[in-house]
Image 1 (spheres, helix red, strand yellow):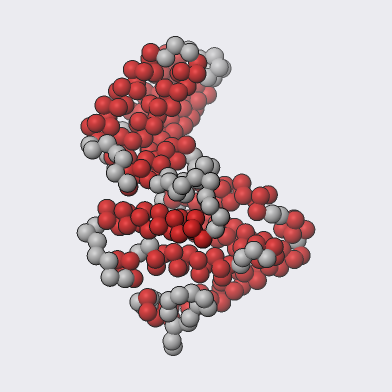
Image 2 (cartoon, rainbow, N blue to C red):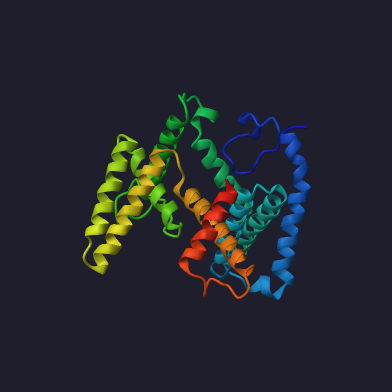
Length: 289
């Protein structure tokens, strides 16, 4: 059985070394059924028919976060479910675009495959890399070249291409800070060592304490958070993941405090003293050890 060719895709699948193409072809029928269901929903369901990219974008974000929750929980069954929900949103947005005449799901897949091949010359070309660092540097260099080429194909850009282009404004603040820092680091603008990044954290901490107006305090707290993200990044810690973990830990222990108070007749977080709650907090912390 020969591997299929994707129309308008600039590479033969067989040339890409996809040894599992025959096995994955077994999923084609399931994919077609999924697409058919989405098409029917968009034709026959009043709610689905009325939706636009804008009206469901918040739901797309929600599904992505539900997938992250499933990953954090280490729950494969829930991951499968949430990946299905997210995949539905990909097909749904693609079908909306198809009915508007802008693109379809085939265009989405061809564009992504082309991008993946182009940005992995060490896999699909003759580029030689020494490790992950080279891969990431090449990726960013190729993206910059793509942006420069795109700007040259159209009207003059309002501003010259930036190394920071492509970081979505809608990312959570910690994640966006990390991505901005990664982009800057890719072109050499970075602290040489994590120790120097930590010195910046200490400097910003002092400036927070010295802030004498509300605006100054907000600015300095922002600078401090940005500096902490920088230090975490250089130490190999994903700050978004670290803060999610800490928030989950706080929530777990606070619920234990509430449960401990509820076990006492008439006690609650609204009536208990801080000392009482601290004692229950310490107990919950000790139980986790």
